[in-house]
Image 1 (cartoon, rainbow, N blue to C red):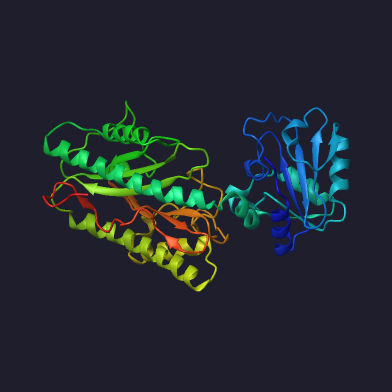
Image 2 (cartoon, rainbow, N blue to C red):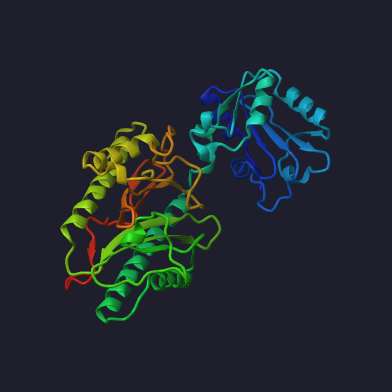
Length: 401
């Protein structure tokens, strides 16, 4: 395990920032832990800091009784113990810098990048140093995936889609056979399918009939679930990754209907979010094809404007999508100009979801979700294709997935 500082320094020089100050107290800055390859079980009870200048040699600052967490980083070490010595050592380390990047977000506009407390930012600024956000440069080191990870994510997306289609077949057959089946039964079938294929997830999937799906994060349990019967919308949102270390998540949502045909109002509502999804995909593809930067907030706007024009904007109550890494909600750019204003650029070598939905409380929830994987050369792929274009009529004679 070895940390290479040259890429950090190159990023700083391109951004015109004097230094990068990675600071942590008791695991508050998981981004710094990731970038510095600190073991997740490291015992950190005291403040530490790693200062990476755009030019020159990095240094690390650690408490005299707790040097081990940074011991794998072979750079100059400066120790402190008292609060006065902490302030003195940090002041000396930052002397001569006019600007430093930290895991900080102005006005907390992008919470996923806001890891440093306000007091520490105030302290650094009291030294006459301007603190700027590391949000743009940090995602290069926390969200960009290896070629192996990108390939693995594509394989997992295909496996996940197969598992979800099997779940819909299970629903279809159970309803046709008049066998009592609940959301929880379907959820557990998916969980068992994950295990049989060597897939894991941080939590069980969402299986929700129409009124329950109106709550986007509803999930059934053994004691809280609903029976799936005739003429019901059934939404399945599932996410998983391979159990091998470093594997990347896939995250998909499909919607079925336990009838032979789809009611016109449901079909029309689903068509609205499909059009929004497709507009977002088109924007991403067009920008990468022309080599033009595309930012998270723009993807959200492309999707949301379609839904708002349809008159359903007030029912679209969450961002359009999120970054995906080894975590289902990764630290990279989100497709968001609703909950936050994500100004970060979408980078080659990353993955993210596009998942518009509309929700009518206690009545109905609909969502379509796909993963977009941007290859290292900028090629835009959607590994779970074909995409859902209409609600699945699960009891139609011709239905088969």
